[in-house]
Length: 388
Ligand code: KIV
Ligand code: ZN
Image (cartoon, rainbow, N blue to C red; front, side):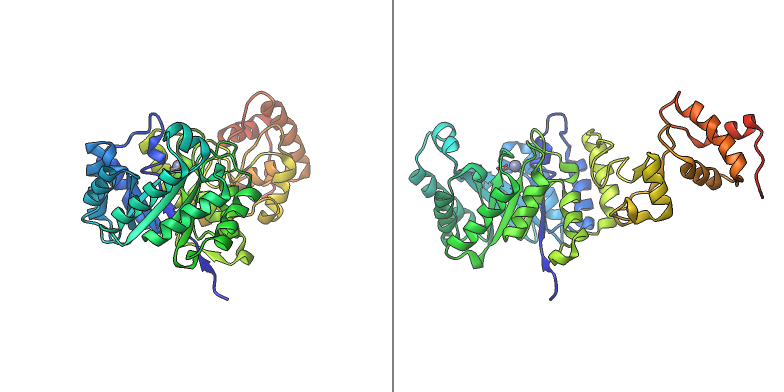
């Protein structure tokens, strides 16, 4: 059976750019959009056109530039938002309007000061209006993660009848547990009439560090679109990281899912977004962090040197990262020292290696990392002789 495609909806330029201090100008947005298209994302959420003239112009420019991916624009369930989104998307080859409204009790009562029936009416009106401009309309039920499932199903069914092509079920506050979120998606699939005509989408935030796990649980529950950002950037603790969701699906082939992502471009895309947003990637970030393929303890180094897969589940080259590295620290063993010495041209017998190792430990205890120039000095000072 051929794998089922999971669509990748990138919202780096919309939800990702909402991060304080990460504002991008139009040229920077165009660069990122081009890179996302090269990367192979299915949908680029380019912005929220009604929010500012600059965002409108950026969405319009991305719409005009992009030829392969769908270009999506966000709007609230507000007439002027939707008209403005449609206007910004005019030049898009594959335009999508993303519109929606809060459906949880706190959104309805406190944010919208409304009632469930009024929210349902606004949802339907928004989808109908968006549909009068474009064929592809995505509806979001904001805070779906904390929305009562029965009401959520009613809203979803009404949105489908109004013409939605994609239903987005955001865990806006990053509250859900993976099993709970997966079950919510499954509940909608089992209980909403017309579901076979639409694609369900995950949109998970990372407030409890579960965005990726929740997105994957959503896919296992039946969602076939994952909304995510490069490096997981986004409001508060961020969104699902694209590179993580894609690699989870790829590294578990028995799940039988595929994406259109060229994974070898993940590292350079991560670096580009990090640079343009002035948002450093933490060293221990999964997939693209500087330490994602670095080994520094003796036990791990010995294992990796003997057989890479002992401690690595991904070949770094598959995600465009430099080869795995053996970092020499005071926790490193003889095997790692011999390996690094050999890499820089020294081949020692057992006695010389033991001598080198003693000097190495003295040095390593005084600094965070022992680098190649340290090793050359160490060999010279200890007057060690190579076997070859
Ligand atoms: O987190 C969220 O609910 C959103 C919606 C606007 C899609 O970003
Ligand atoms: Zn969001």
